[in-house]
Image (tube, rainbow, N blue to C red; front, side, top):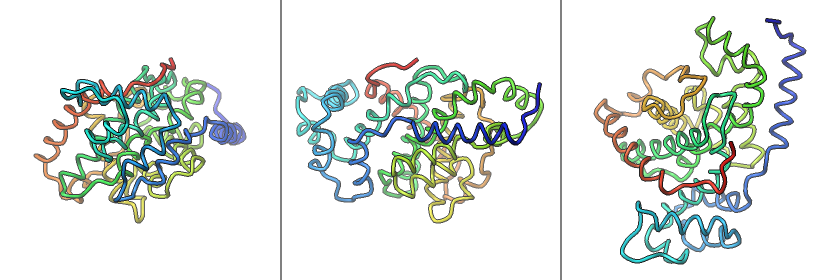
Amino acid sequence: MIKKTKHDKDITLERIHKAVDVHPRMPAMLKDLMAHANDPELDFKQLADSVRFDPGITMNILKAVNSAAFSGSQRIDSLQQAFVRLGSKRLFRIIMAQGLASHLAMKLDGYDLEPHTLLKHSIGVALTAETLALSLGRHPKEMLFTAGLVHDMGKIVLDPFVQENRREFDAQLRDSDAAFDQIEINILGVSHPQAGAWLMEKWAFPEELIAIVNHHHHPNLATEYRETALMVHLADTLVYSLGVGDGIDGFRYIVTEDGAVRLGLRSQDIEQVASITLEKMNEWDSIIQPECDKT
């Protein structure tokens, strides 16, 4: 195998920056909604104003609220009724997950991820991070759920580059003990968390969310957002341990050894979170459906 020169890596990195620049824009509806992500007074009017001009999202919200997971004795036919049944916080989560589903549902050949695998993993991390916060007696911010959803978006950007350098990835995975994100840097010049953070910056996401995405494999490198980065890191670790989302990387990452202890989590807390996560993921499987499959 021909070893890449620094010039080759610089060209690859330049192409990755261009891929971030030309990546599809975040739906305007989600961008508007993100402005209210940390608003403690998030209400139906803000949600309705964000989605009322998007009939596709509205239709999918109504499908979700009438699914087996949430349906009651009466069918829901309007966003106002959906708000009454679900509440603004839960509705926010459904809108964000549904809005990002088409991005996350695609097949990623470079990472060996089948269609919907990244979507299921991402929803699992979002739900687990939220459950971890609740188990610690904290009121989970909408930012935490959203960060869980988008933490691996960098894989979508990097997938074609992993695919075209797959032989080199396979060789380093076979011949070294390096963590997968370090192998990405060795070959491409950037890891998927870094590429994801670049994409979040392009999408004008809040600083806290960008930091969480950037540091979700190394939360100790985060500064003022270390606790939320650590929650997403532990959620990512737990969902991988449940067998959801591993591909070529095979969960070959560094796990922060004292992360659970620093948050005050006991082993029984982790077991309970895992049980709740599985239950919630099964529930959400019937809720979130991308508008189309990109395979």
